[in-house]
Length: 404
Figure 1 (tube, rainbow, N blue to C red):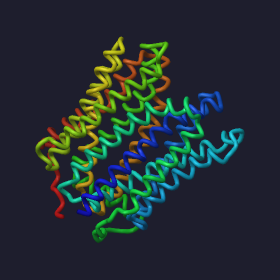
Figure 2: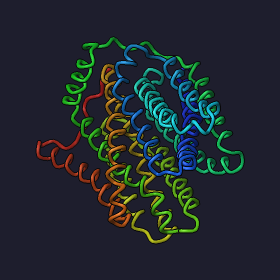
Figure 3: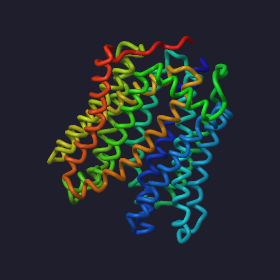
Figure 4: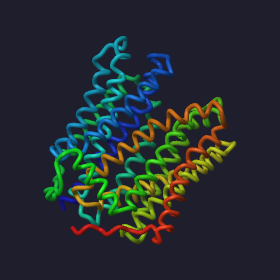
């Protein structure tokens, strides 16, 4: 019964905190631009946010080895609420100086919360319920994205930025209250060294013994570069197709994509087969569907075509996320934490570098060509993984499930 209660609390907490995250993603970027009237300031703000995530990935393993359980998760919710609260007490004339600090704090808090929750989920949920719980978490995140993205602009227009920031801080406080009643199983005895070099050495050894997991991380890194490219391209394609209503088009596109992701997560949880090999295939095929969906999206010349292909792009995202999270959580206790820290490092670095590399291409090429190039990277990585597996004489297959 406690595990069922845990699942409900986690899903609700993720729904509320992700709603807040998407609310501030839209509102803060707009606020920074209005305050500074400088695209460079927006770039610094986004880079600081990514920097916070990278820093979290580097210290996450050591931190959660020392402090695990629910209290660190609550602390990172309070941290996110606190840094947003600075915008309510610092005069607007002085906010330009602290906005990069706020961005860093949000990026750090978001990533530390994700590392702690994802790596400890098997201590909260029974193994046979992990797939279903991950699917509901992905669904909640998708619903939060639809709500946060669409509501943010309306709330800013109706009530102003301060009200939105206060509401945003409140979402993190509510999420913290939902985390407090969680009950964790005792951690398994940790094998290996406590030193950071020992952790990374254990990770390398673990990935060598599970080459499919290493391949999933490589594909995830490549996919992050594609994601960076289409995120930069979203406002550009919206303005090209509908010059007079670019923001409306962008909101619709994100809503359809997130709806597809929600649907993909629900389908993934209901498909037969929950062995490692099924989760791995779900991830690989999901990435393929997502990248092909985004490539086709950016080849369209009408709003209807754009929205039509947003759906399969979202479906693939939902499939791949559920497959990846559920599969990585099958790894032994001593490997889960470094794997999730490493995954966050790959994703944050790939996204940050990808945005810097992709942005200039939009000045030289059409959006469709840029997205084709960058989403071709995960597709090429998938093909390489397959070719390497065939050359070694073994089709990509599951590594053994660890004994409970």
